[in-house]
Length: 401
Image (cartoon, rainbow, N blue to C red; front, top):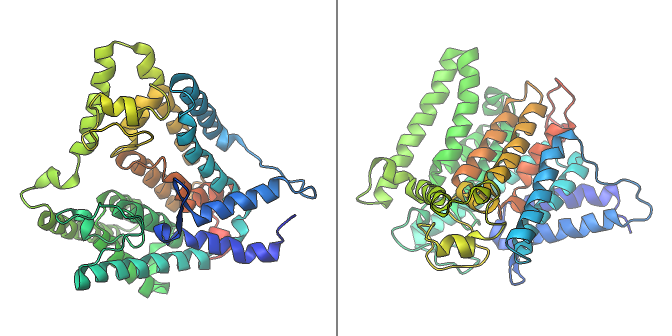
C-alpha cells in the first residue's frame, strides 16, 4: 500500500500543523504520544514496506555525526545502564522518524503551511492567556500541577503547550522560517502577522529564544545598515526590559540574575562535575553513566535542585548536565559535531538557518529538549532545507516565497 501524492499534499500539512496544538492532541498509552507522531510513524512504515517503492532512506555526509551519535547512545545505554535505556532511546528513534518524514515530504511544506502554523500558535496563545486573565482558568490537558499560583509559568503565554518554553521554541523556530533572510520584506508584507508574533513573544517572556532572534537579524542589519540595526536592537532591549519587569512581578523578592532561573541550570552542572571528580572515575566522565541513568543514579546522588526523589526516565532543567552525566564528554562532543555539521553545510547566505541552528543549541543549553525533539518538526524542517540546499543557493521553505 502506498499513499499517493494527492493525499500527501493534504495529509502532510495537516500533520505539520497538528504540532502547533501540542497537548490537545496527545494520547495516553502509558506515555503520552502526539497524534502527529503516530501518523508519521504509520506513514513511514507504509513507505518503507511498500513493494512498489524503491526509494529508501538516504543519509549523506551532513547526517554522519547524527548517525554516529544515535549508535553511540544506543550502545552506551545498553552496556552501562541496561535495557531500561531503551525507553529513553525510543524518544530519539521517534525523532529520527520525524526527520525522515520531513525529508521525504519537504515539497508539501509550503510557506502557507508555515504561516498557518504561526497563526495557530498566536490564536491558541491568546486564547490561553485571556482565559487566565479574565476567568482565572488554566488550560491543562495533561492534568499537571505545574500551574500553581506564584509561578511565572502561570501567567506566561504557552497556548496548548505544557510549558511556555516549549511554546517559545516552536514560535521562534517558525518565525525564522517565516522571515527568512529579509525582515523588512516580512514586516511590509505581513504586518498583522508581525504584530501577532511580537505580541506573542512578549507575552511568552522567554529570554533565550528572543535574544537569538534579535541577534540574528540585528547583527546582519547592523553591518548592512547601522540605523536599521540599532532599531532592531532597541526593539529587542525594550522587549527584554518589559519581560524583566513582568518576571519581577511574578517572582517577588527576586532581582537581577535570580529572575532567570540560572541556579537550576548551573548548580546541577557544577554538582555533576564534582560527582565525577569525587568518584575519581576518568572513564565515567568521558563516557557517562549510561543513557537514562539521570532519573535514578543522578537524582539519588543529589545532583538535581528540582527533583529529589529518584524517578525513572526523568530529565532535568537543562540537557547539558544530563548529557554530561549520562553520555559523558564524548557524547556531548558527538552532539556538538552534528550541530557544527549543520552550520558548515548551510548555504552562506541563509542567515535565518544559522539563527535556527543557534536557537537549537541554546535550547539544548537551557531546556531539557531530548524528549521534546520528536515534536520539533520545525527543527527537522530546518535540517531538511539545509540538506536540500545547493551550495551557495538561497532557497525558501517548500520552494515558495
